[in-house]
Image (tube, rainbow, N blue to C red; front, side, top):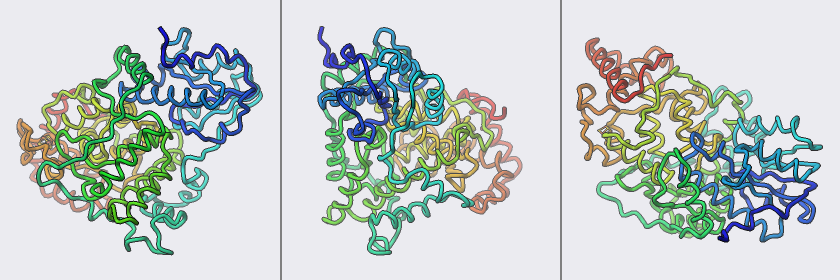
Amino acid sequence: MPSPTDALNCSDVRSAETLLFVFGDCLARDTPGLRSLDKERDAVMLAEVMDEAGPGASSKQRTAFFLSAMRHFALDLIERGYRVRYAKLDARGNTGSFTGELERAVASLKPKRVIVSPPGEHRVAKMVDAWRDVLDVESVEIDEEEHFFTPLEEFDEWADGRKQLILEYFYRDRRKKSGVLMDGKDPIGGEWNFDKENRETFKRAPRVPKRYAPRADDVTDEVLALVRGIDDLPGRLDSFPWGVTPEQARRALDAFIEDCLPSFGTYQDAMWTNEPFLFHSVLSPYFNTRILDPRVAIEKAIDAYESGHAPINSVEGFVRQLIGWREFIRGVYWHEGRDYPERNGLDQHGKLPEFYWSGETEMSCLSHSVNEVLDNGFGHHIQRLMVTGNFALIAGVHPGQVNDWYRAMYADAIDWVTAPNTVGMAMHADHGVVGTKPYAASGKYISRMSNYCEQCCFNVKDRTGEDACPFNTFYWDFLIRNRERFRGNNRMAMILKNVDRMKDDDRAQITLRGRALRDELGIGGISR
Ligand code: SF4
């Protein structure tokens, strides 16, 4: 039977002077590496490998998204006249690793020179370093980076010598340098950020615009069938909400700007049952695989502001995600070095509860947030930080296990994104590099920002007892456990006073209930 991706079978690529190895998160159509190739003599290679797309490394949604985007990218290259060597995941002889596939390609094509896309992970960067010694080629070079606004050297210069890396200062610096949303020396709208206006909640079920959802073509259908056949990949694939080409990503961007951006800022931190996307852009998988250029998104958002279509609080919030937070965490990831993803600043060693993989929990907020990730490979930022992340933090889970879950489950996940967001931001495990205080919160916060608690069997007002909201028990238990650790943190002073004022008996009750809950959920002991 002919397959829609038959063109990817590489039998006609038998030699290459230069071989460009493109990773699945580097699918920009135009890169310095691609521009440098001679289409007659050189070749591009892409490899689907189990080490990156199989159980333990990825989820059904994430693997399907990456593989389909890679296959579309490779077919487009062939149409544009490039010679492509493509290793499908289920191809006979696929070694299952980047190194194995590259070694096979070098042995067969005999290139003099290998160019590799910029790695998005310390682990992969280390692998690329090793290729310089093991491959029988004259050179292994890394392609020039054009996707990000801030070169890593520039971030290092900004960061070196600072006592603390504060996003707000970095962001203002970027705004001034780029001139984005600037009126001369002043920020447009008179403020650098409008977060104060961006904390509205929904009083009733919100009317959320229908999302642009491209129909799966034959290539995607082929990938979905392949992924459904892989045993033990977490998550579900009953539907597939993702575009996989630059055109589809542009349409998703246009739909966001048109339908969602006007309300995006105001409801940025709100949550609602069965509304996994609300007014969020849901464009991060496209940015992070580089099939969508953030510059285009910023331009369109600013146009929307200038034409009066979207207010400044929304546009500034969206722009901050792109030139502020995204660039900041990438800079932090590489600046802090290889040990960053392994940090465990709060010395927590609990096990990630099983419901993160199954979605089976009676806690309504977690049930909705986790099941949406299992269904779509996506959760919006406040679910990530204040529900799934917050719970893992206050329950005492090991940050490495949390990072592994985020990196596997989300369609936009690559280590440079997940490690600072989870190890740093959510788990406060990086010794305070990205956050001056932990984002720990009780059920009260979730109750204020969502309708989850209305449908929950736990009582959001209680902190001990069988029916008490586990977020409350764990929140106070977390503060009791870490009381001395946070003593010197001014931002924690107020809340620690409440812990100090508690009766000894109340503290003991919370500690006991916390321990029992951890046992019930399979988290176990927190200490090593
Ligand atoms: Fe979540 Fe607690 Fe609210 Fe239940 S009561 S939804 S567990 S915050």
